[in-house]
Amino acid sequence: MPHPYQSLEAELHDAFWEAEDDASEVALMAAFLAKHPGPALEIGAGSGRLMYPLVQMGLDVEGLELSRDMLVLGKSRAQRLGVKSVIHEGDMSDWNDGRRFSALLAPAFTLQLASDPEQVLRHWHGLLANQGGLYLTIFMPYAELLGDLPENEWYHDHSVTLADGRQGLLETRHRLDRVRQVVEREHRYSLTGTPPVSHHSRQSIRWFEHTELVSLLDRCGFRVDRFFLDFDPDQTVSDPDDVDFDGILTYHAARIL
Image (tube, helix red, strand yellow):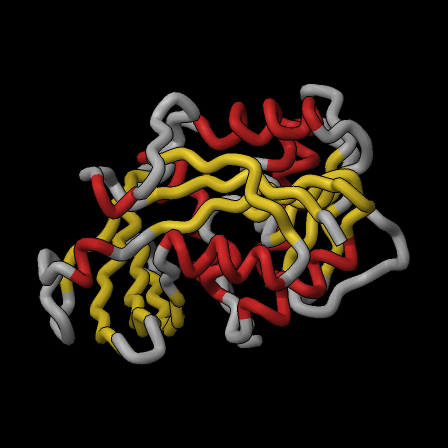
């Protein structure tokens, strides 16, 4: 798969998330791991933004990350926090060190970056012990699909003021491939300073209908035990298409084969 989150994209990634995220997914993952005690692996751990708080809770969690720039940021974050943990360098589609984990964590829409989601899920199945748990978050890009964001036009996506006063900005434009169910995104990152810095990147994000994802998980040897909407465990429905929500779905599944 391509190497995302390089250069300024890696540097600003956590700042954008932390400006808008209340760390609710950390609490959700901690509750999930309590039901699947034992060694766990966060896939797409980045700089440890979500993983290190779990480690600080005393949970046995390691990470997997493809981007070397994110790995460097992860080492710096660990030093600042005084955390001793491991983030392995590797691709989520084939990394394997021979162990089997009690749980896999795939938060923050990581699966949607996979060029072949079925192959990736089959590989994750092999990383889990029998009855091991899979925590998975995906989102439906409703703003793009419904036309709330204009296709093929640049728009303001995120902005943040860093601790040193510099201003970070992300501009995005996209196009839809409805046949392949892929949003192709272009990103323009910029950061004020002397000199100012900019970075351009591309990203392909696949979306899944709920029934499609449940069927895919079943084919890959997983049983979906529950799912809920918008990071709220109390927000459960029989069919997400019947309700209005922000488009975020979290699944708890188990390896059954």
